[in-house]
Image 1 (cartoon, rainbow, N blue to C red):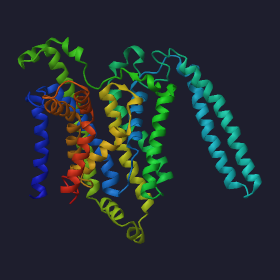
Image 2 (cartoon, one colour):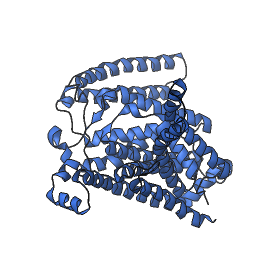
Image 3 (tube, one colour):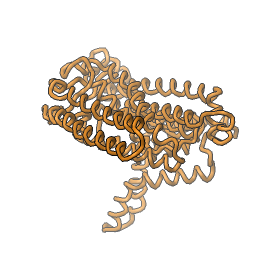
Length: 450
C-alpha cells in the first residue's frame, strides 16, 4: 500500500477509535462523549508535544530527553500570566526577590569579567573566588529575606507572588483570555531555557546531550517544587482561569438549557460536552497552525539543510554550514513548541501541580509517540500522539478486563489478588509491546519520512 493511501487510512482508523469511545458501550469503550472528548483533548496536546520533539529529532537528530522540563516551564507561564497578583506580595518581598536575582546574575557577570581582564595566575583565581563567594552571600541575604516575606502571606491559600491578571483576586476568572495569552509566553519561556541549555550542551556528543537535558529538566522541576514564592511548590496553584465558558454558567443559561433539551441531553452532560468541545477547537486550531508552519519549514531550503546536517554533519560542515548554530535554532524551536503544549495542558487542567511532572509521562511517552508515528514526518508524529495517548488511557480497562477473564476460574487467594493488582502495570507492558512491534515490522514508523 502506498504511503499516500496509508496515511489517511491510519488517521481514519484512529478517528474511529474516538468515535467508538463516544458511541459504543462495549468491551473497552465507555459509550460516553465526555470520556471521548477528554481523551481527545489530551491527545491534541500530546500531538503538539510530539511535533516539537519531531522538530528536534526528526529534522536534526538531536536526542533531547529533557522534554518534561520545557513542558513544566509552559505550565509555569500559565500561572505567571493568567493568575492575579497576591495582594501585598510585591510590597512585602517581590522587589527584594528581583533585586536578589539581579545580584546573582551580576555576580556571575563580574566573575566572567575578572577571568577575561586579569592575567592568568594566582591573583586572578583569588579575585574570581572572592567575587563569587562575596556575591553569593550578598545574593542570599537579599533573596532569602524577600522569599520569606512572600511565603508568609496567607500560605494556606497563596504564599506566592501571583501573576499578571488584571482582574484581581475576586474578578480574575472573567479575564479568561489571559490563559490563551500564556500559551505563546510559555513557548518563549521554554525557548529562553532552551537557549541556555543549548549554549551549554549542544557541543556535546548525542549521548552526553541526552544526559545533560535530562539533568537540566530535573533541575527545573526541583525549582518548581521548592520555590514556593514562584509556583507554590507542591501546594499547587488551583483555580486557573479558563478561555472557555464554565459549566455552571451554561447550566444557568435558559437558552443553553433549551438547546440541550433539543439534543436529548440533560443540562449537566451537555455543559461538560460543550466545554470540552470548545477546548478541542482551540487546541485543534493551534495544532493545525503549527503543522502548517512545520510543513513549510520542512519543505524549505532551511528544512533540506537541516536534514543534510542530520544525515552527515561532517559533509554539511565542509559545505560551509554552521552546524552548532543550526542545532541551536532547531533545539529552541522544538522546545518552544513543547512549552506551548505545557501551557495548554495546565490551562486544560485548571491547576499547576509540579509534583505530577515525571519523565515517564512527559518524556518517554512522547518519544514513543514520535517513534511509533514516524520520526521526520510531521503527520506521523501527530498520528503517534493520538494513537499512543488513546492506548495509554484505554490499556488500564483492558488490563482489568483481561485479568478478570484470566482469574475468573481461580479460587480466591494471594495469587488471584496479585494477578488482579498487576493489571495496573499493563500500561508500561503494552507500550513496550507496541514499540517493539512497530520497530520490528515498520522500523521507520507507521507514517515514515519520505
